[in-house]
Image (cartoon, rainbow, N blue to C red; front, side):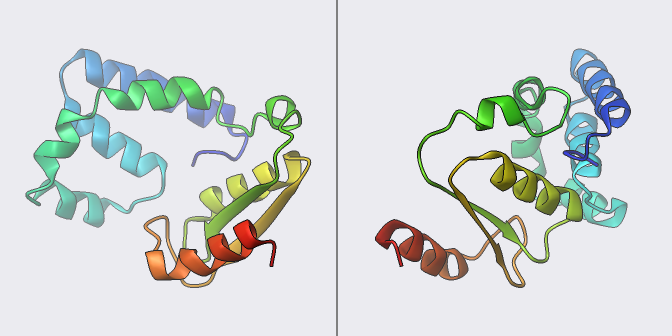
Length: 141
Protein backbone atom coordinates (compact mmCIF):
# COMPACT_ATOMS: atom_id res chain seq x y z
CA UNK A 1 0.00 0.00 0.00
CA UNK A 2 1.16 3.56 -0.60
CA UNK A 3 2.26 6.17 1.93
CA UNK A 4 3.45 3.72 4.57
CA UNK A 5 7.16 4.12 4.10
CA UNK A 6 7.29 0.74 2.34
CA UNK A 7 9.81 1.86 -0.25
CA UNK A 8 10.25 -1.67 -1.66
CA UNK A 9 6.53 -1.85 -2.44
CA UNK A 10 6.63 1.62 -3.98
CA UNK A 11 9.67 0.68 -6.09
CA UNK A 12 7.89 -2.46 -7.35
CA UNK A 13 4.83 -0.38 -8.24
CA UNK A 14 6.96 2.15 -10.14
CA UNK A 15 8.70 -0.61 -12.09
CA UNK A 16 5.41 -2.38 -12.88
CA UNK A 17 3.63 0.84 -13.84
CA UNK A 18 6.32 2.01 -16.25
CA UNK A 19 6.59 -1.44 -17.80
CA UNK A 20 2.86 -1.67 -18.38
CA UNK A 21 2.67 1.83 -19.85
CA UNK A 22 5.65 1.19 -22.14
CA UNK A 23 3.94 -1.97 -23.39
CA UNK A 24 0.75 -0.03 -24.12
CA UNK A 25 -1.16 -2.01 -21.49
CA UNK A 26 -3.04 0.99 -20.14
CA UNK A 27 -5.88 -1.01 -18.63
CA UNK A 28 -3.43 -3.14 -16.69
CA UNK A 29 -1.62 0.00 -15.53
CA UNK A 30 -4.89 1.40 -14.16
CA UNK A 31 -5.61 -1.92 -12.46
CA UNK A 32 -2.11 -1.95 -10.93
CA UNK A 33 -2.71 1.52 -9.50
CA UNK A 34 -6.08 0.47 -8.11
CA UNK A 35 -4.42 -2.52 -6.45
CA UNK A 36 -1.79 -0.23 -4.94
CA UNK A 37 -4.41 1.97 -3.30
CA UNK A 38 -6.27 -0.98 -1.85
CA UNK A 39 -9.11 -1.67 -4.26
CA UNK A 40 -10.08 -5.35 -4.10
CA UNK A 41 -9.80 -7.47 -7.25
CA UNK A 42 -13.57 -7.98 -7.63
CA UNK A 43 -14.08 -4.22 -7.61
CA UNK A 44 -11.37 -3.77 -10.24
CA UNK A 45 -13.01 -6.45 -12.37
CA UNK A 46 -16.30 -4.57 -12.05
CA UNK A 47 -14.64 -1.33 -13.09
CA UNK A 48 -13.11 -3.03 -16.14
CA UNK A 49 -16.62 -4.00 -17.23
CA UNK A 50 -18.03 -0.51 -16.72
CA UNK A 51 -18.54 2.10 -19.44
CA UNK A 52 -16.08 4.35 -17.57
CA UNK A 53 -13.12 2.02 -18.11
CA UNK A 54 -12.06 3.37 -21.54
CA UNK A 55 -11.80 6.86 -20.04
CA UNK A 56 -9.55 5.52 -17.27
CA UNK A 57 -7.38 3.76 -19.84
CA UNK A 58 -7.11 7.01 -21.80
CA UNK A 59 -5.66 8.87 -18.82
CA UNK A 60 -3.46 5.97 -17.65
CA UNK A 61 -0.25 7.68 -18.85
CA UNK A 62 -0.82 10.41 -16.25
CA UNK A 63 -0.26 7.79 -13.54
CA UNK A 64 3.46 8.09 -14.33
CA UNK A 65 3.35 11.79 -13.38
CA UNK A 66 1.52 11.01 -10.13
CA UNK A 67 4.09 8.33 -9.38
CA UNK A 68 6.98 10.71 -9.96
CA UNK A 69 5.46 13.32 -7.65
CA UNK A 70 4.92 10.74 -4.90
CA UNK A 71 8.62 9.90 -4.87
CA UNK A 72 9.29 7.03 -2.51
CA UNK A 73 5.72 7.15 -1.18
CA UNK A 74 6.49 8.75 2.16
CA UNK A 75 5.26 12.11 3.42
CA UNK A 76 7.75 14.79 2.28
CA UNK A 77 8.31 16.14 5.80
CA UNK A 78 11.09 18.59 4.95
CA UNK A 79 8.95 20.15 2.25
CA UNK A 80 5.82 20.22 4.44
CA UNK A 81 7.64 21.84 7.36
CA UNK A 82 8.22 25.05 5.39
CA UNK A 83 4.54 25.63 4.57
CA UNK A 84 3.49 28.77 6.43
CA UNK A 85 -0.23 28.84 5.63
CA UNK A 86 -2.77 27.19 7.91
CA UNK A 87 -3.95 23.91 6.45
CA UNK A 88 -6.88 21.58 6.83
CA UNK A 89 -6.09 17.92 6.18
CA UNK A 90 -9.13 15.69 5.80
CA UNK A 91 -9.50 11.96 5.52
CA UNK A 92 -12.46 9.63 5.35
CA UNK A 93 -13.12 7.27 8.22
CA UNK A 94 -14.00 4.54 5.70
CA UNK A 95 -10.92 5.14 3.52
CA UNK A 96 -8.14 2.56 3.33
CA UNK A 97 -5.74 2.82 6.27
CA UNK A 98 -2.74 3.84 4.13
CA UNK A 99 -4.62 6.90 2.87
CA UNK A 100 -5.65 7.79 6.43
CA UNK A 101 -2.07 7.33 7.61
CA UNK A 102 -0.85 9.64 4.86
CA UNK A 103 -3.31 12.33 5.94
CA UNK A 104 -2.24 11.98 9.56
CA UNK A 105 1.45 12.09 8.64
CA UNK A 106 0.99 15.17 6.51
CA UNK A 107 -0.96 16.95 9.25
CA UNK A 108 1.83 16.15 11.72
CA UNK A 109 4.48 17.48 9.34
CA UNK A 110 2.72 20.75 8.57
CA UNK A 111 3.48 23.46 11.16
CA UNK A 112 -0.08 24.82 11.32
CA UNK A 113 -2.46 22.03 10.37
CA UNK A 114 -5.78 20.79 11.60
CA UNK A 115 -6.54 17.14 10.88
CA UNK A 116 -10.09 15.84 10.78
CA UNK A 117 -11.64 12.52 9.88
CA UNK A 118 -15.00 12.58 8.11
CA UNK A 119 -16.95 9.70 9.62
CA UNK A 120 -18.23 7.15 7.15
CA UNK A 121 -16.55 8.80 4.16
CA UNK A 122 -14.18 7.24 1.67
CA UNK A 123 -11.75 8.86 -0.76
CA UNK A 124 -14.86 9.67 -2.83
CA UNK A 125 -16.25 12.07 -0.25
CA UNK A 126 -19.83 13.34 -0.31
CA UNK A 127 -19.85 17.15 -0.76
CA UNK A 128 -22.44 17.42 2.02
CA UNK A 129 -19.97 15.74 4.39
CA UNK A 130 -16.96 17.89 3.50
CA UNK A 131 -18.76 21.27 3.35
CA UNK A 132 -19.16 21.74 7.14
CA UNK A 133 -15.46 21.04 7.73
CA UNK A 134 -14.46 23.53 5.03
CA UNK A 135 -16.85 26.19 6.31
CA UNK A 136 -15.54 25.79 9.87
CA UNK A 137 -11.93 25.97 8.70
CA UNK A 138 -12.36 29.04 6.51
CA UNK A 139 -14.50 30.91 9.05
CA UNK A 140 -12.25 30.06 11.97
CA UNK A 141 -14.98 28.25 13.85
